[in-house]
Amino acid sequence: MLEILETIESTFQLVVQYGILLMECVGVIILLITTVKSIWGCLLRDPHVRLTLAKGIALALEFKLGGEVLRTVIVREWSELAILGAIILLRGALTFLIHWEIKNEEANLG
Image: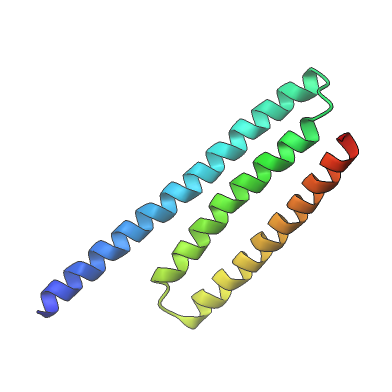
């Protein structure tokens, strides 16, 4: 019975780790695509380039934040949880500020 539980636990950890990796990769890919689009928008002097960049960064941060929340499932020590909590708070604050910037930029353009 103990072997079955250990197998389930190791499988669960593996699934969570792959989920974290997937969410982190999606966040990086979104950020890279947004960067290229924004550079192109700068070259074309698109007035909406700041808004495009802010929305892309916000979306990428959401995926990265999702990865951090998923990571809380497999932490084993309080110190790890404290570090993850600080990272989540920081990324949450950044997401809030970026959404505020998006709202202001949309108001200025509209």
